[in-house]
Length: 410
Ligand SMILES: [Zn+2]
View 1 (cartoon, rainbow, N blue to C red):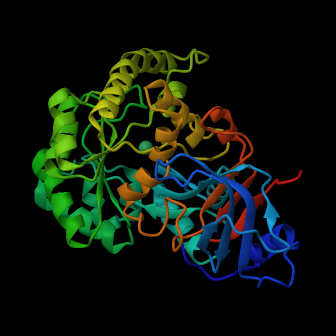
View 2 (cartoon, rainbow, N blue to C red):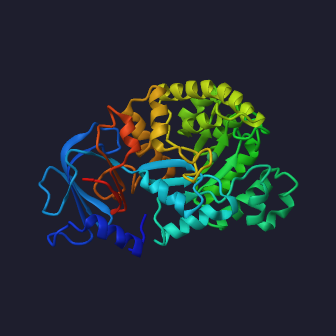
View 3 (tube, rainbow, N blue to C red):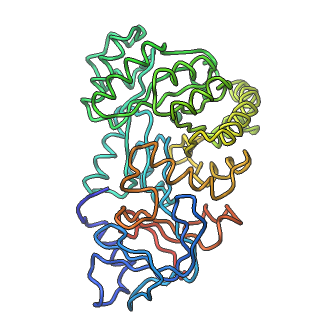
């Protein structure tokens, strides 16, 4: 993401880059002695020098680095993670996500347009955070109070459902006009509430198709929240870019996803807190039973998607907030879940980098470590292909060439 140098970035530079000598300009960053996992799925290369200038990677070579380079001492350099499904809605959460290694995220859902405002603060350089693509709401039959208060022209839907392709199209146009980067639609009910049934469909094929038409007309993608077999199938047929969750996707739908190039963000890791056995309220127990029922088909579906070659991308479905049930989920959790479903660690890392970048349509500028792309980088000190737990402990995070976290040498 391109943004002006701001006071917080200058502070980060003073802390992190003060070692850079006069031999390199202030806009240069040299990382020496890196083992590079470039995000494309290629195996690591060793002893690399990475030169970053004006926020972009300009070279990856075996050349020796100039004085003042940051010596990574054989640590592993990866592309910054892409969290393709979050609910980051405030600056503190955005900063937490960035410091965890997430340099790009898609925010699907937005209460009171807080995510949209946070995105703008980050874009203006007023607060640190990943690049955020936000949906500015969740288009579904029951829009909910937060949506209606944000879009008061749709007050008629506070106590009445949104139904029919024309109504859906009108709402989607308004969300786009308000500044959304992506459209989120509800193809089936939610899983995280005891009062909903995730197998039950929400918007119909015709309604989702209308959303896809409106979004495509403005060059935007549609992400469909969907668990139930019918909802997932309708969304795929309607041409959404990605299925979010996809718990009960059947074989015919998976085949259709393969054929149409539909991405899948299974959000495996978020399901475990829903089933956290520590809860003892009636609602918690209902969610525990539901989770038990949902995890098996979800994991089987992801195994099948892996075998078929359906593009799967990482998403935590988390808030990166402070204290709520999903706040502590990290991309590393999702990578571990993918490994349990048969992905190699390298394939799971690719799901968090190159594949997720393609899903978001930002692959021309991030998602892999390639000359010309944004310097969105993550450093870990052990080989993540042998020990994925290292991905929970970033040593350094670089976003558009700015060092936003540096624990090297601590
Ligand atoms: Zn979500």
